[in-house]
Image 1 (cartoon, rainbow, N blue to C red):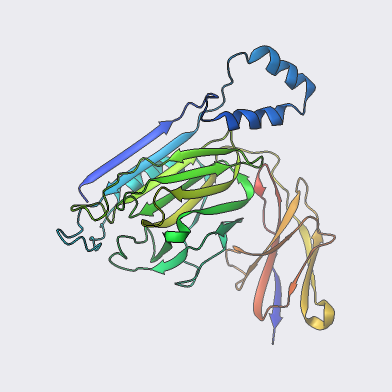
Image 2 (cartoon, one colour):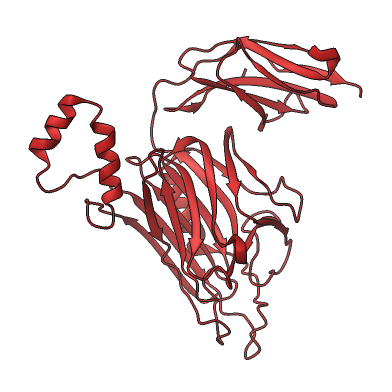
Length: 351
């Protein structure tokens, strides 16, 4: 049950779904090296490599999902960067739907929770947390476009421009699928590149196959939209890096970033129990303890201001319920749940 504290104090479209065959070539030898590092921890694995890999190794091919809705409504010949906002995004939505149809437990960060003009650093994908590094700004654009950018759901999105041309999302747990919507990509001639990095520092890089136009050309593709997603069960990654070839000039909008599971996992963390709260240090802090759950390596404490809420706000983590978690005493009414987590299955049931 939840513990409670009451405290007084367009015209052109493109859709593609691809399976990449990634044998160890000059472009992906980093992947091969990472696999070697993983397997060399076992002597029998070393022998197997020696006798069965005279040419190369094969692994499950990544799947990529891409859909683009090209917008040609920017007024000519002035190139005012004021295109009309599309009423629908059929190709982008179709790629997104194909992406999520291959996953379970999809969680999406919509950027609606952050104040406009703020630069969020902590993102939430359901119960999975992530750190956003880079000088991006949350924009609220209920109607029309902002220099060709706009949200693909709700009213808000992330704007990247200039110095924020490279940014990264670092997850608290390894992922095997990631997808996102983007707007106004390539109208200034830039090529969007997405890189996935695992815990060994190995990187897989993908050039998003979107359209481009010459800067200040007329007509151009300002206000276009796309969806791009990658599913790669053979390469669990902890970091997604966004960059492009012309960050000093071109700016992009990003929205609706999603993760999901590629299949059943085991073991699922069991439920934690006996969540207990106390107020040490003259009531200036709030301390949580609980009984550990089976098959859990870490624990996440969630908060909500309603006992029937979704409990998406993460207040902290701990490796054990015996040590627990201490936070500054909040004000107002708050309810709390705790859940165990592990690298295989992520966060378990909240109790």
